[in-house]
Amino acid sequence: MTTTEAPNSAQPEQPPPSEQPDRPVPAEMTERQILQAMSGLMAGMFVAILAGTVVANALPRIITDLGASQSSYTWVVTSELLAMTATVPLWGKLSDLYNKKLLLQASLGLFVAGSLLAGFSQGVDLLIFSRVVQGIGAGGLTALVQVVMAAVIPPRRLGKYAGIFGAVFAVGTVAGPLIGGLLVDTSWLGWRWCFFIGVPFALAAIVVLQRTLSLPTLRRDVKIDYLGAFLIVAGVCALLIWTSLAGNEFDWASWQTAAFTIGGALLLAAAVFVESRVDEPIIPLGIFRNATVTLTTVASLLVGVAMFGGTIFLSQFFQISLGKSPTVAGLMSLPMILGLLVSSTIAGQIITRTGVWKRWLVLGGITMTVGLALLATIDADTGFFLLSLYMAILGVGVGLLMQNLVLAAQNDVPAADLGAATSVLSFFRSMGGTIGTSVLGAVLANRVSSEMAENMPGGVEEGGAPAGHGAVPDTSLLPGPIREVVENAYAAATAELFLIATPCAAVALLVVLFIKEKPLKTTSGDQRLAEEAAQAEAEAAAAAGGPASGAPTDGQAVGRTS
Image (cartoon, rainbow, N blue to C red; front, side, top):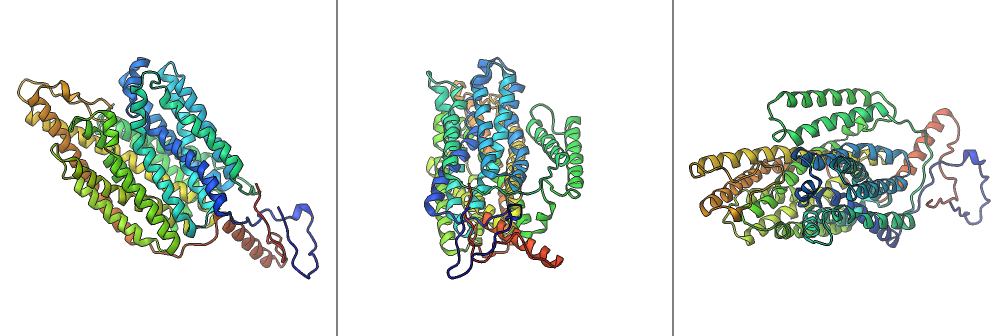
């Protein structure tokens, strides 16, 4: 910490060390410092997204090599998703209490440990455990990367950087299955490299963050709400397990559904009761009194349903209805990536320059709704040009919405709640994607079954595979008439998914219209936190009739600490 003397004035008397301010006002980072730190943050975000997507095309080979059952297939996917989604709020709250840089490096360390365990697994039990460890690390990265950005970059400058992270998110989401397919198809690599590939990126991120990211360590009394954390994780896991397994392991209308939904609801109700009565809740319920936070949370949930629930089945459509290989199916998703990349980057630059952001949210809602509605018209005969155009429109809409919703919320909450508010948005977006994927997967399975039952030639069994298990029919091995029925069935079912997702996008647009535009702040989260702390101490001192000890003395400027 450095101090400078005011010109021609006596140096103020320094308080003893025990009375030194606990919250120094950090100096604003330069453009070069931000870009250096961003390289580590981008690497961290990329490996977090890659963890959940790179195994998509590799799972059938993994399960076969390990001699595992079909139920194990489901749990290899679900365990990572459960751990990531359920721990996002916990990481967000920890970032409000402890050093964000150390937490970010710890989450990267967990990811590395989980990846190495997964890559060296000789049995499915260890693989599932390693995926849980990976998920916990990925949950930290998902929450903390955006929290750290808000801590060091003022909202007015955050737009252009948020656009870059939106692009990284899109690339990791869509390119992951393509990378996984290439690794599996490469004989001298194999499926184990689907887990090893993220390790160098994570280790590089740890080193880069250590060298480039400087964050203040705040001294404050910490009270962890362990009971609230347990209830939140248990309740969320119950609901996620239900949405992940219903329709596959048991019927939607079954006693298992009743047990998971009622149990999850009771656990979350208990969590709300506990959170409303503790000093340091994991999710401060007071943030939902902020209309911007509430509206952006609802919009994030709906964006998750529309984006993840609608697009995750596109790869299956490409492979079955259009007869493409897994690698080609991954490449066919590039128009959506490019749309998201271009829109998020350009909008972020314009928001940073003008400070106006709501119009981009509204435009994103309109564009995403139009894109989903157009994709609802596809069939087995739709040309690639039209498909590319529709996917690009959807990508543009998602790019304009996703990161700017986070920006709006971060701009309108106290700095002390930045971590909690950011993680809440990420949490509900992930929940929306999980719920949307499961529900729409059930719709897909039912529509495919009904289409095949109606059109399949008599005496011939259906050539499809149950949706949601990763297995797809090899249409190249089917006789011509049967292949045509299968292709049309999956095309009709996929179009119906987008038709169902369209109203979700329309409701998200309606919610966005009610968000009130407020000027973007020009100070970073760390600076705002120091200012808020000094103001609170000044008010407390004034009420007690004494001087404030937390505010910097006249003539002093306090620098950033490592």
